[in-house]
Image: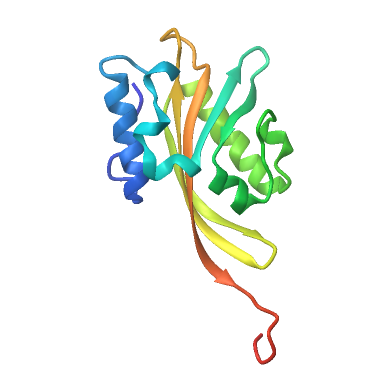
Length: 159
């Protein structure tokens, strides 16, 4: 059906989001957008992503990108698609994840590293399908949580 990610999500906040999504879907394959209330996820508010899914051809448009995500990435994708992600490698990864979730109806969890300017972050991410009619995925709910792992400085005496 939707696959079980318990045991594969290390981040407790993302695991909480996954369990929230499961509770909201109940016996249905997927919850609807109306089932989801971002205010019920206060620890994730700045890290939430909502993406509209259009079919024939398959396209994605960011409806919401949390403020923490915008600050970390240095750009806002609101109203745009993943083709506007500046880094080609990361753009390909995100496009692949969105396509998999939208076409299979299965949640995807992943992690990695991203760098911008003089900083590098580790991130954990989760993308979940939503459907207004129970038959077609028409929105994706996700979250991406960042943790700084490196910072270079140009101070005298440092490398």
